[in-house]
Length: 507
Image (tube, rainbow, N blue to C red):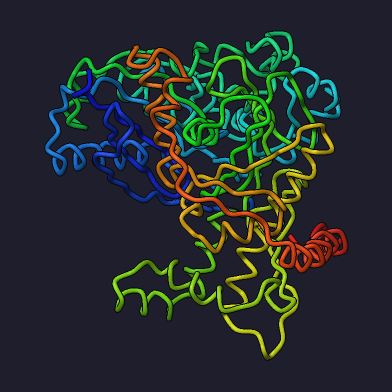
């Protein structure tokens, strides 16, 4: 099988990335395509699953064409996807509406009404996660209340990776790593709790059969082969949560190892070999059987920098075009000329509310410390530092919960920025290791395919093939002292501004 390949499809928040790997862990070809986020009302954030399929299938077809690889030599396909989708399909497999995505908070009122009759601590005891509007369960309940005609037609609710797997194979599935979006998922037993579902008011039959992430769900159908260029009959595994696949792709598979997420969303995932839940954090099964991930997830990761570049970076985009480089490289160069601490400018990256550990859908983004001496470069650097502060907040919360982060294995687009890696190391006091950078999530997806199809004997072998250390960043004590003061202001700003953010007229 040394002349075989594995294909990974990554359904992120802002884009689909398709990566073809050789079975010895080398990238052969890559393609990508962007997605739109629709915001029809305050607090709403939706995407069209049909657009995910159109973009990803076209990307696969382009990849096969440009690489010249015979599709028959692809031994398996793995799919990872963003969290907490709630894709309603009918019995024909038709998508009934756009799905609210992980940053959508429209179901806040639903959550408040549910916990009045089903105390949140009792829900938490079952699923190990807080009952918040961004999870899948409240979105299902929102459909039932606000769109009853649509809900009557709903046959199943799918997650992002499961939807792509369904389009590839015609088979319905729900992998265990995505089970954490359901508050009737028993986190200890890793199965659905029918009694809890009934008490929440959810029909558990809406959820497809649960399966391990590396389990082969089905094979590429003739119809999917025509859309993608893949060979009919190619095995497809269930796949899993993008953060969990990125964690696997970074080689983080045993207790106390930690992945740092540098994608659209920010955060971290600490491996734990025992159930360890905290209501301020997020707990999910790893895509590796028998392991949990204690996660801290913030809305402000690479997405915050992307927003800043889009709104303020016209000059940087023009320079980047003239130089033939990325606009983000120009932003990095400008931000690097500003001293650590951004001369007192502090950024709260709460651009769509905030997830852990605040769980505040009304939190707002803030730049603090502006005066006439400040430049766009100060603003850009403050964004990088603000995201690092949110990472530190989650790491400290995990430590309070009894989980020590240790070395951070960084992944995602942000991992390509040496400046951002140094800032995160200095802010958190933790060493940052780059293993795979942008390709880690896709690598995790194809490792699942490789293990599921028997190419690798297990996850230990797969990790040994795929993970290679590219760079290492240690914290600087002098910079850490500067950031300690900035972090105190970061934490105080939210606490002092929270009453203002929660005023009705501020919504």
